[in-house]
Length: 354
Image 1 (cartoon, one colour):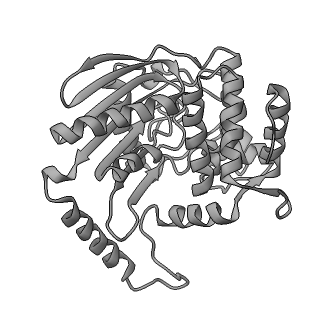
Image 2: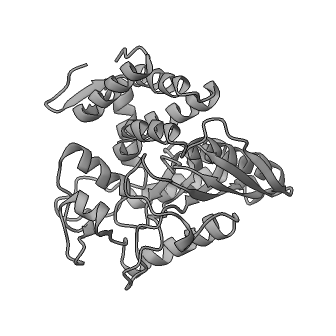
């Protein structure tokens, strides 16, 4: 469906089956294909375009090149009443991350708090999706993962860590859940790749070039330079935390042992994750907690506004409003991604139907 210049508007209910059918055609089991489609379209609905359907071509390329196992043997390596360790067998990170969070939720319903690790998986997509599962179950959820070495330690020059995203979600009552979903770098690496795909510059505060100077060229940053840490050494410190919980504790690869990745879909993308669910009822009645969260949200919104600010938002509120709007009006998809999807539908013999 045509939209503004450079953008096509598509309905989520049409986009989701197209995405699932593309992966089914590539040999992905139907249930897993539906899960991947669910998470990718949710990213587009929330406005996290860098982790949405723009990723499909890369995932399909990874399957073709043997870098992503469409039919993995995901194994439970170790289990206690409140913990579990998963071996991902190079599976879709999205599929294993969802399974890991569901295990954490199920265990937390009995033990109060549960933690699950998952190693040797690929890209996990919208990290905020998994804590939101816990929030819908009336729990607090955490998710995080490490990945390819693309950033140097603060003050260093040798790529050692990934953007190491993490997310946390808190259920609310009358309000929507509070959802923090962020990379420990200023932006996720996918935002640079999406800008390069569109032929657009990036803000100069996002990344450095090969000489350590700010750059607006996404390709220079991806292939020769570095992203910058959010908050300088503080972002690096948070990334180290994610590296330990996601990489070290899972028994997966970490630090310099994780292969670097410059071209998404053409090189290995190996990551490991850490997922937590906290059963609020073990601390106080859920209704009391959500009422208190609502009150906190009210405190935040009641702040005197800085000059030029129309409204103060809590984490995840803008994305929720965007989702509501896009479910009604459709998802704006850049023409470059739209054409890419059209070409993939032809290649895999899948009805396009957007």
